[in-house]
Amino acid sequence: MNFSRYCDLCENRITSLEKGLTCNLTNKKPDFNNTCSKITLDKKLQEKLEIANLELEIIRRNQKSTHLTFYGTIIIGFLLILLGYFLSDWKIFSLYLWYVKIGMIVAGFSFLGTAYSKLNKYRRENKKAELKKNKIDEVLNKYGISYQENFDFKEKIHGTQEVIVNIEFKNWRKGKTTNTYKFDY
Image (cartoon, rainbow, N blue to C red; front, side, top):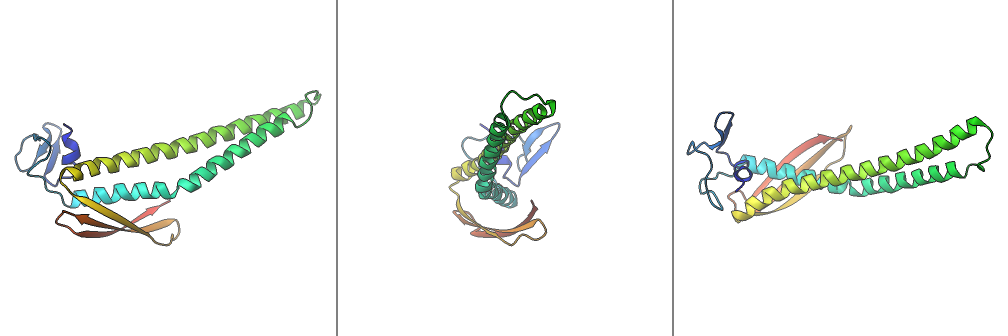
């Protein structure tokens, strides 16, 4: 069993180089089946849950822009390749025009590579954020805690975005939390 998922959210977690992960209440390594009776879910849970959900929301909000950038870069890449290929017939006697043709084709392939890398980066970040959120949700489901999140994105000022994160919990002693986060793009 992966105890670190549970202990990462608990206030009683202690980690040290000599003992590793231990419980502050028992001074022993975690040892439980399914759920821990001594788990204290409070500020760590709240902060990790809010940040994980916020990261995923930001990535999802950038999905349209990422896909538009991908398709635009693909189109430019193919146009450069085609334009380089059909610039003039292949009986070019000027070395300069050969350099221009080859340069356009190489630039086209560079655009295709850039498009792929941007889309791949988006997919990796999205998968990582979903995994992070799902790990927290898995632990909360074991304890019967569910929640509904709401994000209020304020106006971006000088590259800094302010977001108010509201989370309503069911079956947890905290009914509702509200925190503000600021981040730079």
